[in-house]
Amino acid sequence: MTEAYNPEPLTRDNAAVVFVDNQVGLMTGIRDYSIADLKHNIVGLAKAAKALGLPIVTTTTSSQTLWGPAIPELQEALPDQTFIDRTTVNAWDDPRVEEAIRATKRSKLIFAGLSLEVCAAFPAMRAVREGFEAYVAVDASGTFNMTKRETALVRLTQAGVVVADGASLMIEILADNASNQAGEVYGALGMDWSILVGQVRESA
Image (cartoon, rainbow, N blue to C red; front, side, top):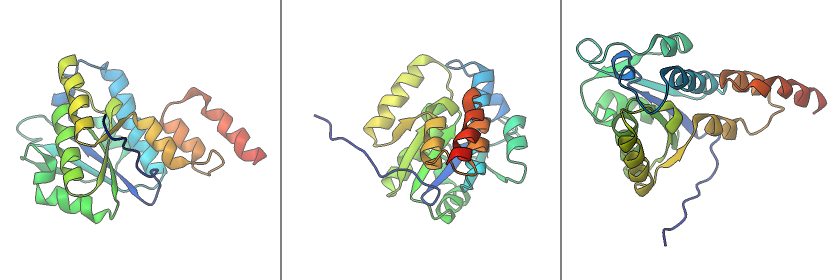
């Protein structure tokens, strides 16, 4: 019987988000999500993390020679963000990326990357080995076929990484629908019922 893994909740004070290689060239090969849905999920995660005041780290791989720049929608959502461009397969293996992650001073790291089984999974698994708690926002981490998706989820789980959707992770951090950031977070995630949050706040 596998031992249950149920870490303490994510909060604004213990969590950071790492976007790995959400690049134009990689996006063209995605097959487990529609491109529109995947972009929606990536951008929603970025905007919600920003609204919650979470530290954010962003990377690309060989943007000038391989996969092109980060998708414009993500750059627009994070206009002040520096994308660390590297050559290492595992983002964590680049000293600048590791330094940026450690500089967040957060113990819980949420990864989203293209592709799921490499760009998101490799640094997430390394994070666990380094003593962090790692999460992967699966719906913001597309890949190239369903076999890759299925095996990635198994491997992540075996490695002690929490797999979830980005929206549920952000809402766990939000914690209270009466928060001043609630409307912005729900709006960022594209939830049609977010208008109701204002009513909750008014009655709280």
